[in-house]
Every structure is written in C-alpha cells, then in structure tokens.
Amino acid sequence: MATNIPYIELANGVTIPQVGLGVFRMDDQQVLDSVKWAIESGYRHIDTASFYDNEEAVGKAIKATGIDRKYLFVTSKVWNDVRGYDETITQFNKSLQKLNMDYLDLYLIHWPAAGFEENWRAMEDLYKQGKIRAIGVSNFKSHHIEQLMKSATIAPMVDQIETHPYLQENDLHKYLKEHHIVHESWSPLGGGINKVIDNPVIKEIAENHQKSPAQIVLRWHIQRGEVIIPKSTHESRIKENIDLFDYHFRLSSDEMEQIAKLDCDKRVGADPDDEEFLKKSTTFSTQND
Ligand SMILES: NC(=O)C1=CN([C@@H]2O[C@H](COP(=O)(O)OP(=O)(O)OC[C@H]3O[C@@H](n4cnc5c(N)ncnc54)[C@H](OP(=O)(O)O)[C@@H]3O)[C@@H](O)[C@H]2O)C=CC1
Ligand SMILES: O=C1CO[C@H](CO)[C@@H](O)[C@@H]1O
Image 1 (cartoon, rainbow, N blue to C red):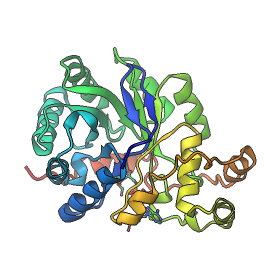
Image 2 (cartoon, helix red, strand yellow; image 1 turned 120 degrees about the vertical axis):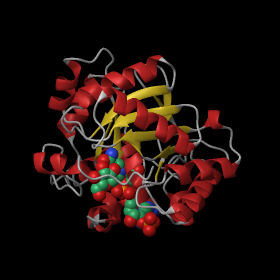
Image 3 (tube, rainbow, N blue to C red; image 1 turned 45 degrees about the vertical axis):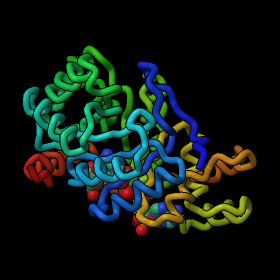
C-alpha cells in the first residue's frame, strides 16, 4: 500500500511521520504481527521504550518486513531508573543493540524524574555524534522544559505527552507550538481506558462521516497538528488508525469545537507533577539485560 501520511518538520529539519504505531503492552508475538501489519498498511514510524521490554522484538519485526531502515522512523526512551551521563550512554547503546540498529530517529527522556539534566547532556552528545537524529522529552510540562533549558544547549524537538479529547492540554499545546517543539500524543484514543470513543458526541460525528469513532478522535489530533502513536494488536484497527487522510475526510470547525468542549482534564496515566509516582518509578524497571 502506498503511504500518504503527512510528515511534520522538527526544529532541526528532520521529518517525523504524523502517525506511528505504539507498542506498549505488546508481547513479542504481538509486536511481530502488529509491526508487519503496520508496515503493510503504510506506517513508517514505531514508538517503543526500554520500559516496554520489547525493543528486541521490534528490531526482529522490522527486519522480518524487509523494509529498508532508512524509510523508518524509530523512537525509544530512557526510563526513570537511568539517570547520569554515563548510565544514559550505556542504556542508549543497550537499546540500539536490542533494536539491532546503528542509530535512532528519536530518543526521549521518558519522565521528568529528578536528575534528567544529565540524561539530556548525554543525549546532546549522542545527537552531535549522529547516533540520534532528534532528541526530545516525554511527560514534560512547561516548567520541566524551562528547568531543562537552564543547562541545555539544544532544545527538545518533541514532547510526547498524554493527550486525548478528555485531556486536551491546550496551554501546553500552545507553549510547545511557541517553542517549536512538536506535540506528540500518547494514549491518543484514551488508552482504551477512558471510553472517549464511546462518547455520544464522537459517535454522532462518526456517523455523519461514515468513519469509526476512533478515526474521528485521531483526525481531531491530526487537525491540531499533533503526532499520534495509537496502539493496536488488531490488523483491522491498525489499518483503520492510519486511514485518516482521504481527500474528503476533514472535521469542520464546528465539529472541532464540539470535541474541544469534551475536555475535562481527566488523565489515564500519572500526572508528571506526581512526585510520589516519579520517585517510585526510579526503583522499578522492566529491562532484562
Ligand atoms: N511516553 C509515555 O509515557 C507513554 C507513551 N505511550 C505510547 O503511546 C502508545 C499509545 O498509547 P496507549 O496507552 O496504548 O493508548 P491508545 O490511546 O493508543 O489506545 C490503545 C487501546 O485502544 C484500543 N484501540 C486501538 N485502536 C482502536 C480502534 N480503531 N478502535 C477501537 N479500539 C482501538 C486498543 O486495543 P487493541 O490493541 O486490542 O486493538 C487499546 O486497548 C503506546 O503504545 C506507547 O507507545 C503510552 C503511554 C505512556
Ligand atoms: O510509556 C508508558 C506506558 O504506560 C505507563 C503507565 O501504564 C507509563 O508509566 C509509561 O510512561
């Protein structure tokens, strides 16, 4: 299948496919199948993390598709139990080895747990050495970015944050735009937990467009200029989640406004300011060496 996914330009000129496949909570067989279906459906972007404990499977799945590495955009993240310059370099190399790759397209600090400045210092050097094409953060609020910028010499190019119609993050969205940081949305469908795709407003818009509720939610993100990484282990849903770009499929400003009104500041994941979560998360890890 030909790919017609838009690419978004990052501050350094590197381009990122606006839709990617998220692989959190997939076992190895699910990764193998889902990545294959995704590539066949036109995806060129995969989002993993050392925390997901499936980087090796992602590497094998990509290899099995036979696609040339240069056509893919692969992201991984450094987890909260790894802080410090040397530790970050070591962890990055482990991720590369597991993925069976010699560079990453994007590497992110997974959460703003204490000490992230040293992760960043190491990531800046890896970036300068050409081992990562772009560097960014995840779950950073604007005050975390401001704190990072006190010591950073390179600004983050991406911030991957929880975003869906029940948590629209409008202030942070605006801040990121003003600072040329691409807004990437995790749990773009509400993580399968918050039932945003069962919302009657979403369902009615879906009926009007003869699209699924998931496609309406994803199209809403696309029209806000966000990068999205929906996860699914079902072939039909993987196809559906990237089938957002046909000529006639565009939400009107009235429909965008109706969805804007659904915002209720309801998270499915942790609040990045939850110090208890951040502290606890530095003591667990799923990395098998
Ligand atoms: N940086 C961070 O801290 C975080 C990053 N992430 C990243 O974001 C990705 C996506 O987030 P995630 O939390 O998985 O949530 P999503 O919002 O992508 O939702 C996934 C859920 O929705 C279901 N689903 C997917 N497509 C459809 C569809 N078309 N119709 C109906 N249901 C559907 C999936 O079920 P099924 O699989 O059975 O189809 C699954 O239960 C992750 O995989 C990960 O890569 C996630 C959390 C935190
Ligand atoms: O990426 C992630 C997947 O989801 C986890 C929560 O269940 C997050 O903590 C983590 O950041």
